[in-house]
Image 1 (cartoon, rainbow, N blue to C red):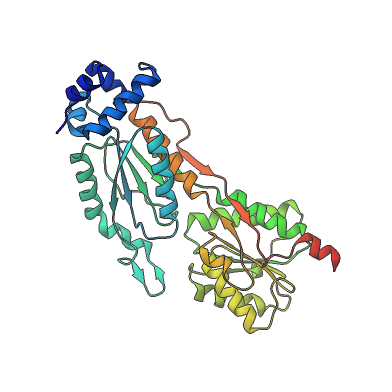
Image 2 (cartoon, rainbow, N blue to C red):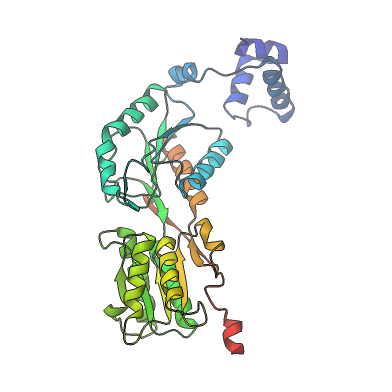
Length: 354
């Protein structure tokens, strides 16, 4: 197996120069020398001994990424963002997957309260990370919820797409309140005054933030909050169906419905179809999460797209800053979402032509 000295000898440079190239210290090495050293590394099949480097420097360029479940629809994009940013910063990734999705399945929904029962397994993964010499950890949630008290480690730690209420913890999530305000404001701008809301569970912080955005938009327009227009689901399509039926049973039903996730929106669309109510001509509807099915239902569903790749990139940058000893001022970051309009929303142009 080729050594660092072998690379230096064949490239005609010092071992220090090879070390600079390995560590990305390109300010110390010219581009021609860098290219020659990398070509020799490839030719000789040289692989740096990461653990040996860790013992010498007491830190590695390795990030441990602990995912609750890599198969859930949001996580893959987060991992993509982490990987992109890590590559750019010359860091490597060790991925640990807890595969919790099936383990916490309860009927037609996931019971996130069960995750705490796998705390011993989580700690075992963290111990493996430590033994592998990782310098920092990113914990990737499969749903943006409170995971406070779940992890116990003194390694630099960043939570992605989940949060804790601890002031000193570092979290990267999406801005639920602002996008909810913008979505409801758009509905109001289109002339709707009775906007139904199919909410998530009341004990969910994302539910609370989205509700705040809904209420803020109504208040800014001078519209009185009507509790009869609020129904509650549990994130499943079945609960969305039931909640929508409740709204349609009102003496004065809504002309637009905002669902706090896409599965509930799909259930609501089923209810509207059964009642022979046309979307969007009679009732406009929007969801949240922008899952793949949004583009395949009829009509295609308007939804909020979350900045998953950006959350991953941000989390990677923060954990590298922590590893480097930099002070992180903004410890609870919320990134902007965007609205993906599809045919379940009637365009303003179409409205004006009616």
